[in-house]
Picture 1 (cartoon, rainbow, N blue to C red):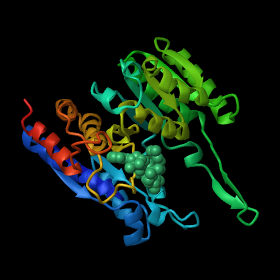
Picture 2 (picture 1 turned 45 degrees about the vertical axis):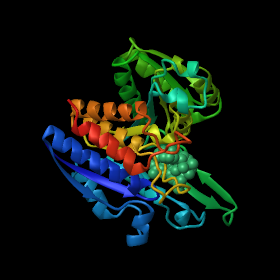
Picture 3 (picture 1 turned 60 degrees about the vertical axis):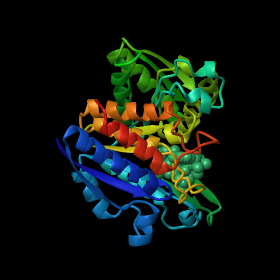
Picture 4 (picture 1 turned 180 degrees about the horizontal axis):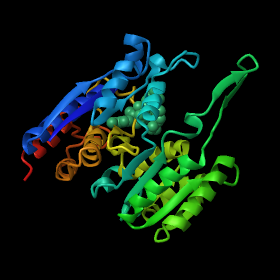
Length: 356
Ligand SMILES: NC(=O)C1=CN([C@@H]2O[C@H](COP(=O)(O)OP(=O)(O)OC[C@H]3O[C@@H](n4cnc5c(N)ncnc54)[C@H](O)[C@@H]3O)[C@@H](O)[C@H]2O)C=CC1
Ligand SMILES: CC(C)CC(=O)C(=O)O
Ligand SMILES: [Mg+2]
């Protein structure tokens, strides 16, 4: 097939891990006979430095004409002054809204070797296979923000409409039908009005449209504990933007590293935005030691969800799995014998080139 893929490396370790994704896409194209036109765009801090805008119009145009977008990460200390007029993260939020990708899928299925890297008891990881469905274009990240009283008071408004909750709930329910038909909806309905709206809409949508799906509501503070005590008891976890952001970083502990969790952000069209769940990791940027597997697994999600290339997606997932089995591990996963970002990426690309 022919497809145009936009690559947005961004900041910090973003360019390091996206470079490995590019090598992997070339390997997929060669092995499976596809033509991928790959075009790079600016986003985040580097875009502010070069254009003054964290999401330049050229990048929007590139993403809108592409079949899929792969992003590294944005942000870093250089652009993090609390009084800065513009921030890298605004570019990413605007891109998500512009592309209408309201459902952020974050699978967490620890590899069998994860017991070696994860700090939890191995028996807690048995059978863990989670899919977070995080609402991505609403809530406090997108509501009105500002300062009052000469800057001494700040506010971020969390807003959700019935329609925003319905569409992501339906998406989660459809995904649950292909899995264990169980959804845990996470909110803070004992305190927040938005959560009470979520609870009533989620209950109605499941009752009216998805009676075959078992669902429960769990308060977010308790959920942070349940996730570490009994992660195997959950399947699909549906939640709003802010809670989903926080819970999925926590869930990366089950897999062993932030550097292992991919994500797919999708809307009603086929084009999607794919990115590792981690950020720009300024503490390790520029050293060639970042784990590229979350980004390579995001390529697998891109191939599956936006290009409909399931065999190719499975080839990538199998190649990463082989790398973990073979102990091809970056420094976040092992204290001894760690490989570099490019050695890990090259190992995976080589397995794809020889895939049956
Ligand atoms: N999607 C995005 O572009 C995101 C951007 N950010 C931005 O990234 C910057 C740094 O944020 P942090 O809170 O430090 O979160 P972070 O996710 O960048 O890093 C947290 C910790 O995980 C480690 N880590 C992350 N990814 C890794 C990888 N692939 N391999 C090995 N270790 C990895 C880092 O070294 C660090 O110790 C901030 O400016 C933040 O706004 C944060 C999250 C998401
Ligand atoms: C805008 C991003 C920095 C939010 C985030 O941390 C994420 O989406 O994981
Ligand atoms: Mg995050």
